[in-house]
Length: 126
Image (tube, rainbow, N blue to C red):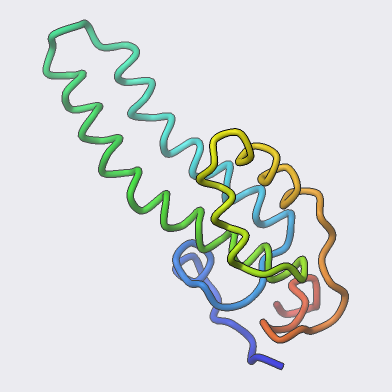
């Protein structure tokens, strides 16, 4: 059995170790959707050929790299929690299958009790 993972936002958003419950995974995905929506909405509101649209594009690129890494590692932790291999995260880069895979990760139940990736995330004190 693996030891209990670290706590905090850095562990949640950027660490590969441990397990992640469906509820926390859904909230973290919502967080990244909102972060990425800010520069997208700024680009939509900007007038064509303005510096505002350039800044919105730069803002999106600056937010996309940490979001992509975070979504990948959170998905690996969610797959570990469901008892599935983390390599299945590669399905998220296939356009036709990514939506289906995200839906599966949102509804697939957690493995009860500890597994080799750590204790169950629904245990007290997790």
